[in-house]
Structure formats: C-alpha cells, structure tokens
Image 1 (spheres, rainbow, N blue to C red):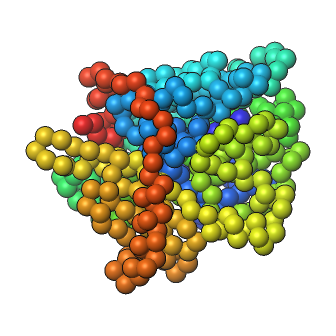
Image 2: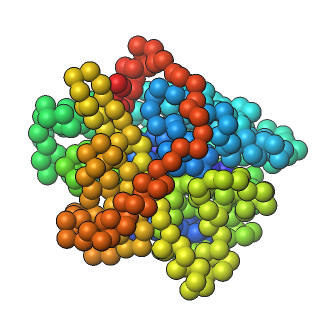
Image 3: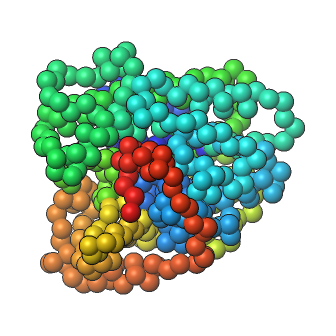
Length: 428
C-alpha cells in the first residue's frame, strides 16, 4: 500500500517534532516503522513529483513536467512492474492530475478518480471507502494499492470540529482559499504575520482531519488481520510555503519548505523501527519497495534501494548515502521569456553532503546553502564559496539529461484550465 497525502509538510507531523496535535494516528503508525528524517521530493508540485514517485526517475528524465504532455509510454512504473509479476494493481486518487489524462494510470488494472471539490471541507471518506471496498474483495493474489488524499492541499478547509481545535482568534480577511493565496502571490493583496498564523491553523486542522481518515483505513486493516502483514509506505509529493521565502502555496521554488516530505515505511516482517538521518529522495521509493517485495529492480532508474540503511548500517554505508547527490527540478513558476512566451521547468537543485545549490537555467544565477548551519536555506553563500558552487553547478548540469522521448501531447479543455487555475497552477 502506497499512500500519498498531497502537500504534507513533515515538520507539521508529531513524528517529525511538531508540538501541535495534528497527527496522533500517523505518529502511532510511525512508532514501529522506518522514518526518514530528510526525504526530498523531486519536484515542488503534484504532477512531476508523482511521476517520479511511480517511476523512480527524476523529472528531466521522465519528462512529465508540464500539463502539455502525458507520461511517455516507455517509462515503466511500479504498477506496471508489479502487474507483470501477478499483482492486482489499483489506485484511488483525488485529483485529475493523477489520472489517465496525463498517463499516470499506466500499470493499474483499476484506477478510480474521485473528483476533487474546489472547496474541500468534508474528509476524503470516499477515497478511504473505495480503498476498503477493494481490500475486502476476495483475492487469490497480492494487491498493490495506491491511495491519494488531497485534503491538506488548498483550499485549506476542514470540518468545524477540527478547525475549533486549532484556530486562534483572527479578524483578518485571509480565508485559506487558493484564490486568496494566489492574489497574495501576484501582489494583489498583502499578508502579514497574523494572516500566516491563521493559514497555519487552517492547514493544521485539515491535517488532523486527514490523520483520522488514515486511521480509519488502518483500523480496517487491523480488523482484517492484515495491518502487520502489509507493506505500507506513507509519503507526500511536496510541502507548502508559509512565507519562509516570501510567498505561499508551492511549485515556484526549490526551497526546503516545498521539497522536504515525510517518508515512513512500515513492514514488521522485514523492517525494524528506525530513524534515518541520511538524505533520501522520492525516486528511491520504487526500488526500495521492489526490494522489500523480492521483485527484480527496474534497470536504469535514478532511485536507489534504501535497505542497506537498516541491513548494513556501517559507517561506509551511511557515508555513501550522506555524500550522494540528490536532484530536483520541474518547478511551476511561469518565467516570462518575451511578450508572447512563458516557460516552466526553469529551476533545478542539487543536494550533496552539507550543501545545496539552486540553479536558474535561464539566467544561470545560483544560490548555495550550507545545510549544517542553515537548514532553512536563508543565507545564500554562493558569492563567497564559489568553489563549492562551481562544483555543484557542474554536477547538476551533467545530470540534466533526457533519456526518453516526450509523451503524447495533451490539450486541456476550458474546464480543465479553470480547475488547474483554481488549484493554484497556471497554464501557458
């Protein structure tokens, strides 16, 4: 079971040190699991990040980086690999971005799209209900089930019982809607510290609501006696910005608040409870799951099997993971190239050791951060540490390669464009 809670920041979960009671059920789940402290997405928005989650490829290689193309057919997904091995592969998703429209259904025998509401107040009971209905069906072969929750994504909306637990007194006008947040992003309205606190309250309420929905799924597995025999991975596609670098929402930068994600693996037959400090990537999920299931790897992917971190936690193993280069890309910040054209997929980043470099491919400008002393990425040291900046720039550009042909073109309908805009993403 692979669970993706869209837009979930790990630093808002108790298991990652958050002090507000947003996630008691997920925290309990993580108590007997491998918890990765420094998991990094491969992209700061939903479509390319999930393509990396399914394929083990960085965005520049799977090439699903805009709304204009489908995932290329030659990209093998984890669902396709497991289907060939005899698994019953199914997915229930709560956004049209993860449907056959963009090729992410490849390998799933059944994919149920639960249409997202622009104002999500009620919890995603319909997502959980579908997952439980499939689990309850008689089966004579193993199942691979992907479950996607969208409740934490803006609009920040939750039932009153959850909002009452987190909302502090507030008399401002910010309501947590994507439209309000986009107006701030575009300079139409201003936002202050009290507004940000209110947004965080609304975000946390939605997370607590989702936490209890996830528990409903886990309780169902326990009732069936399948909780402790199932491999369960819980993660997210990206985080969310609350003014750490001057903006809100996600998709438009490569900083830690939008790239750091939770990654929790629970499989009692094979995994000990463990907290892993080494940086890992979303592209590592595919090879790690395949290894745990005893399935052959997918050749040529960017991700690596993480199991040596608990099967051989030697100094050499830890050092190899700590010094490994991890890449990100596929931002969704529309850069104006001229009066007519806009272009996405502009910025990239590389993390290696204590350093992280962010690179703009159009201006060739770069930012460098020492994560050991500056984990929030607030002090750019590129001007004073050109040796490290040059080394990481060279490594990043060497990795910026394309290995597959582009997928089939997609022409969004007017209604799809409206939905994309309402969710905070622009189109060209």
